[in-house]
Image (cartoon, rainbow, N blue to C red; front, side, top):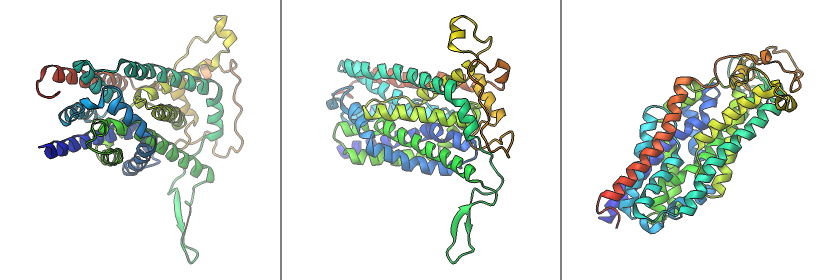
Amino acid sequence: MSEILLAVGIAVAAFVGFNIGGSSTGVAFGPAVGSGVVSKLAAGGLMAVFALLGGWTVGRNVVETMGGQIVPSGLFSLEVSITVLFFIGFALFLSNVVGVPASTSMTAVGAIAGLGVATGQLNAAVMLEIVSWWIVAPVIAFWVSGVIGRYFYPALVRRFEVTQTEGRLLALDRSGAIPRPGLGPNTTPREFVGTALVIVIGCYMAFSAGASNVANAVAPLVGNGSISMNAGILLAAGAIGLGAVTIARRTLDTMGNDLTELPLLAALVVEVVSATLITVLSVLGIPASFVVVATMSILGLGWGRATRTATVADTVRGEGPERISVGALAAEADEGAATVGDPTPDPDETEPRDVPPIGDEEADDIPRASDLFEPATTARVIALQNLVPAIATIAAFLVFQFVPGIVG
């Protein structure tokens, strides 16, 4: 009987990992796919490789936290583990069906917390630390991105804008005895570097996602000793990879095309800030929400960009601009702010253009383009980010509280 339960537990864990791959791939590679730098299939393959790398190196710390520190590891019998993983997987499956990436970490922690409350064995100190970081990390993301947007983003736009040329990025030079890879017929070195940067940052995001999320799929099974740490990471990473090349196509569309009108350079800044925060938290063993941190980073970057129309002294005196909008960030797309994908205003320009000093930039210099967020899609994303973890938490609590025979 125990062998059957273990097989069921492994299958449910794989189901959870499958849905994590569907959710996280859109966050990691949405900008790269939306800009046409990589295909959906290539994004899925890269996600699989770097999620495994992140889980194998840093993700062990998060597995230890979720497998025995939120609630005692002794609570994770096979029956309990299967039930917890089922709630996590079902809630994430609902989010993937509608094409919106939900917070896998918040969902998983919520389900385990529901178990802890129902049994009276929740470690309040550990839970308080996790929730505190859930509050602090988005605030840090907002302000770091805000500083970048206010003081550095315009200079980055001038420095890194790149025209996307026609034709293939790379080609094989067959003039010699051995074919050698080289730049495409129209590819400039600057375009190649910019494109490579987009892919590298997406891989960094995938590494971070693996570090944070492998625990969500296998922590209960590792915690109760049903499978080893290494086997659990391999199981989770394999399932994440499968989800990345299949069900992730819908979330790639949402994050790459539907949610925002972010220029690619802005998306890359958001990815670096978010991935760095999530990686640091994973090293500390804290499961954290990729989606929430990235959302606050986008808001901070747009806010910082828009506030360049006034100095700090002007703002203190109440002489700030009449209009400050995060839509100013989206407007950069019309000015050639993408690293790769949109043409620059002057393709022959070789020197970076001057950046107006803070306070000298008029509000009209930051024109209103489309809003930073697509309102309908954003409302749906925010609602599901809160609804999915709530479903997992409440359902787990009700089952463990009122259904006899599951908790020994």
